[in-house]
Image (cartoon, rainbow, N blue to C red; front, top):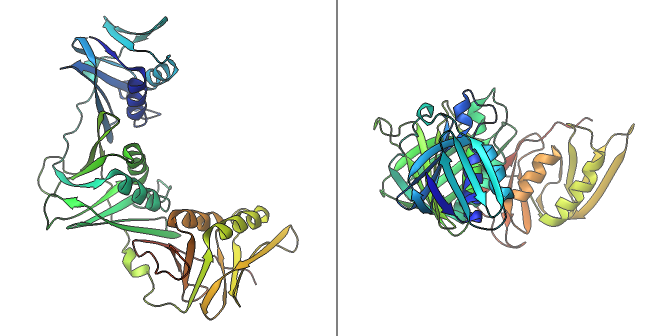
Length: 382
């Protein structure tokens, strides 16, 4: 095997595949990256029996072939090379990487021991890369990180025709985002529970400027069942990734949103974020921030009489009765960052019930119904 490829293209492609490689592989070959040169293109692949990644880019192929090398080492080498064309040659049990006067020799792993990548399910539909990346980032922030509760570490994808709904929760907050896409079938109906970390990395990698195809196998079809796949083109490279779906029953989250509201408060998002960060400096670990909404003012307080204390007030527009409520400051900051709007609206029923946070383009505008962030309150000590 022998080929030449642009250094930036190689480094970017290798880094993307290397992100999916396990840090503690169950088998040594799973730490490897499969390098293939054929038909005028370079293919790089990684697979750990859960998540697969493959990228193909144009390359000047002198001799076709394949080799399996340490993925993370190849990523480190590619990133460190000068901005010149890179030559890669497989010689016996070694791979030689040459760029200008830099030369690296890397031992190969047995290609025959490497698992075959899973088959991509049939395409279900397409969405703009920037829309997909934005929606996933807004929802994944609320996903759980406790592997003892694997269902809560996922993002639920619900597809009904041209509408897609993403939802994630860690029991303390819930994020829901809706967007439209172009389905392959107008009457398509499907659900999937995708690991949040994999979904977030995948969506971010595609980003703006690309169309992302989502491939979800229908139950009972056999081919690709139990997997979700994503494909797209970024910077001239064609990328595809698959991941195994999570098993389990996702919470019936729609029932958690209150049907009515007693108090509605609107505040400038940036002012609230700045005040929240300052007041939270004196909050002990796992202690809430106290927010009081009353008389056109939102007052933030933290700390105790025995320790440091802080308070700050900002202007607010309040409809309904005033109330005092406690929130985990980091969870609240996550929500304020996710709404991506100049005005934040809080809808309350009572201080012991969840609050719904949405974004507004202006103080007198309607809330953005495409994204909702529900946050559980923290009990305040009297």
